[in-house]
Amino acid sequence: MKNKIRWLRISYWAGAIGDFALAVCALVPGIMEVPSYCYPMGLFSAVAFSWGCMLLWADREPLERKWILLPTILVGSMLLIAVIYSMYSGAIAFRSHIHNLVLYPAMIVLWSFSYRNARDIEW
Image (cartoon, rainbow, N blue to C red; front, side, top):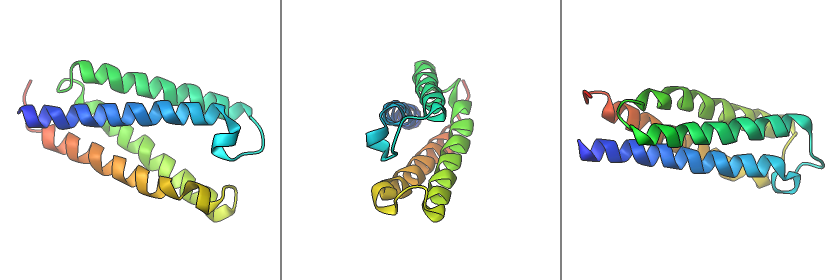
């Protein structure tokens, strides 16, 4: 059981760290390689920061809050789709965001594994 809880906690922290990094990147246009700051990026930054806080909150009671990984998987999948679409449409450069094509699927696999691994634990 401790191993299953450990995987949940790793998932929460990995997601939170990624969200906080994403929130900072969205506020600094140079990091995201966009020409200027725009209002939607500021809104996105607030959401990413909030989601990171929610994942840290889930870490306080990992088993009781494992359900948080389900919407996190959805959000991660939507971010992956947005990156792929933006690359395909030419809105962002492939070379500067290729790491996202590795990072997002890896996080989705981690979250999915952790949730599935902890499903049979009763709290």
